[in-house]
Length: 344
Image (tube, rainbow, N blue to C red; front, side):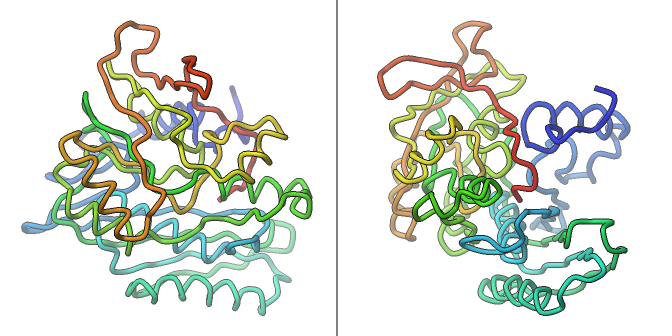
């Protein structure tokens, strides 16, 4: 492809290849991280710099969701929760937040005020300071309403990076999947009134998932919130380019009936749809059941083991995800670029 297409922002292989071609290839290896830190060398949810015996962890993300107000949240709520969760997935306690807001001329100040209040409410409820930012105004029509870029800063004693996944790990999902993606899809298609009870799962995971991640950090070999590209892209990225395969049991993946029914009616695979309040963990089998039990105690009552990691028996499944279907068959799970722009 000679030009950027929407598929390049969908979180699947097209995006991975674009990042490698135009970003990674333009950054020499010695400039991809700071000594003893984590950076572009691992392409995780954030980056880390070691200072003394702790790590400063940084996460940055941009939010262009359409519509900006949706059932379960708004762009401000999503920006705060999304950046917080990126820090949490690296094992960091979020402590500070900065933002860049770009808004078009003519945008209602009342709506901007609502968005800021929504964003700061999430930050303050999680004891996170808003320490700075930037505001730009573009001419009417130059952008569609508003975009927000958030940067989070956290502190960790151990950093979890997704390159450490290994044979035998159990795969844990903490909550029902695809709820944010289904809600935005229904809203964009004008089907929200016909799809019952759809609501985004946007929420920070600081009080439920983070304590468990920090307690079992040395046993957790990968952690991710499955946003763009959904569960299929997250798991595929973990084993991409390795001699491992992930086996998942579709019947064990938590998903609410009304979400499944809506997506089935449209022929959309729930595994490819974004979640904004879910963590996916690859955990040492020695403690996997304990981790699930701890997550239940913290309020993530849907947490369950959905699969495991093994050495690939052949080249066909090497670096791939295999799903056991509800009727007992086996299929390859490919990371799909769903034609759903501006989902987050």
